[in-house]
Image (cartoon, rainbow, N blue to C red; front, side, top):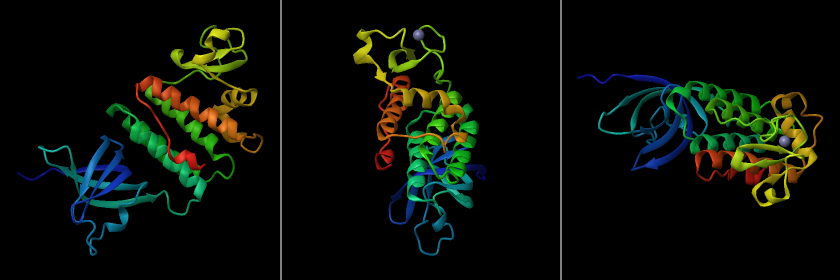
Length: 248
Ligand SMILES: [Zn+2]
């Protein structure tokens, strides 16, 4: 029986050498979500696809699948975009951060198309940002949260639901609390925010227009990262971390 070809677009999240000449890669695809693909013999010098298998390359893939295995087998690949190519150090970090997030997330198959589009657009856009790219990464995370149905309200208090001065992130309630609802007893359970951090959150959905006006201190960068990662960890009951951002 002839094997049926599967055609998908995918972004390479990870690759590891396998046996003498092969590579196994984790790929985020538009139709199948996250899959593992084996590229047989690809490390042989004469294989025409060798140069295509790089982290963050976006490819048009032709695959087939052995029904007895979880692995897809690469038949051929065409390069759509090499996202890491020609981007600077900080931009590389912010691209790798998005890859780390996608590697750790559990993404339902029905969301994979939208999640793919979001990642692909982010990788294109982040290259064009010269200042405070990390704020664009945070906005990307907000959009990931919306697509996965785990968004948090960045303008309203999770207790009184009004838009007041938000002063802390409250992990158990998956949201922010205002200065009126805050109690000293919360002290050990919340992540407090400075005015700068609170204002940043309230502007995050349209932060692209404000990049030249904002200032981001080290304390803000670290606290905002912490809030995002805590939100993810609380929802998925697993620890999220971003090694790439330690270099930012
Ligand atoms: Zn409140």
